[in-house]
Length: 170
Ligand code: ZN
Image (tube, rainbow, N blue to C red; front, side, top):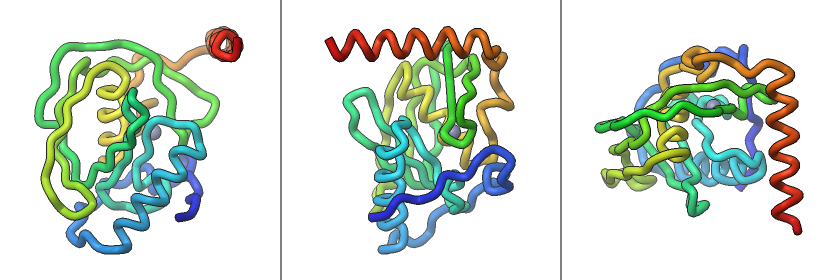
């Protein structure tokens, strides 16, 4: 396994519609293993293949039990409700925006061996499914955000996160 470099906003890889995976081979398995390692190293909750420069329909999402779900050729087959909340992206470091997404999302995908499965989740993980799948169609959340946080709001948010982390340490 190896860490891959995460490309940043402005890189053309992030604007492309990715191609479906047709071969479920060692190369795909290595990509998935590397993406998982890169996700854990980055401290994020989701990573899409175009973010590491691979224009294929592959992403990994960490759910709230901290399990990483591998999604190959994923599609959203059902969505319900609505949530409006904070979103960030490993390819847009240091920025956060307010984005409205469905509250519950059901995804159909293939696993690393090509077997089709379905997964449903809500709240932050549903948000993450939407965010990562959008990457596969060349869309960044900043394009669909209700608004981006101002510098003051961002400082306030970082201060709150630091306080929460200090509380966790006690
Ligand atoms: Zn992202």
